[in-house]
Amino acid sequence: MNKKVYIVLLNYNNSEDSIECLESILKLHYTNYQIIIIDNSETLQYFGELQLWAEGQSSSFLNIDEKDFLLESKKEKILFVKAKENKGFAAGNNLALKYILNQKERDSYIWLLNNDTVLEKNSLTDIISEIDKQHISNSKVIYGTALLEYDNPEKVQSLGGLYHSKTGLTSHLGEGISINEAILNFDTIVDKANYPIGASMIIKYHDLESIGLLSEDYFLFYEELDWVFRAKQKGGSLKILPVFGIYHKQGNSTKSKINEQKSKFIDLVTMNSRITFAKKYNRKNLGFIYLSILTLTIGNRIWQRNFKVIPKILKMVFSKAKN
Image 1 (cartoon, rainbow, N blue to C red):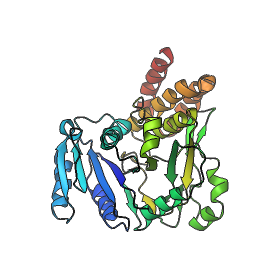
Image 2 (cartoon, one colour):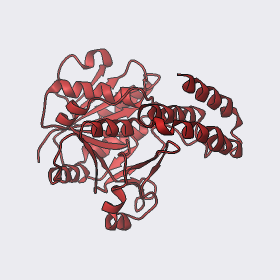
Image 3 (tube, helix red, strand yellow):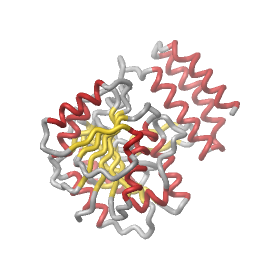
């Protein structure tokens, strides 16, 4: 039960959420962990704010540049790593995953965690306990957990993700139901899951070796779905754990909530990833997905009076269709 856990966070143009998350991690009952926080921010401001916070803590920490990060093992409890540039969710996490693979701690676990989450003190203990009692015949398992609404902690945000193959869209299972309802119907709900929500994913070291890193074909979104598909191609599987101690401020880590509309950037990145995934794993429905974007998606943006993004959507769709 005392396996080492690497907890990986990405930070982007924010320190407040990361600090709240870090403070909840430091209160965990399970203490055999090392935190790796990759800072993808555009300036040094937030990296400096994280360092200032760490100086007031009792835990050891180290600030290091990306170029020096992979050179040797680091023993400090918290590693703050300044990425050279922001290459997206997968690339940022992969920087930490490469370091972890270099450590050769084959019994260790890795927890990829959004920086806009807050944890109950027993959440990591529960995760390790649930994984240890799973009777899964094969290896290559990617785990997810339940996510609860940060602003409404009695409500479920997600019990996993569902991929709609005809449109290429995704949705959250169990969204909005109570914790009691989620517990009562947990197995029935999560049996439909196609992927874990990227805000809380766990993988064993040896399964990471077998499945490989996150695909950097995506800047943001659909990476976790791609990861699970690759695991299943190698005989692996997905398992959502009945752990209800992770609260998520959905949208904060990507700054995607702007006047109740998605930012143009997030809008385009989502659609780009949607098409990229379909071209890799769902080509038989690619035509339907293009049609869905050109009709339903653009129609929705017109209804939202979000006209400026439409030419960019059209340009992106026709560019992807040519390749």
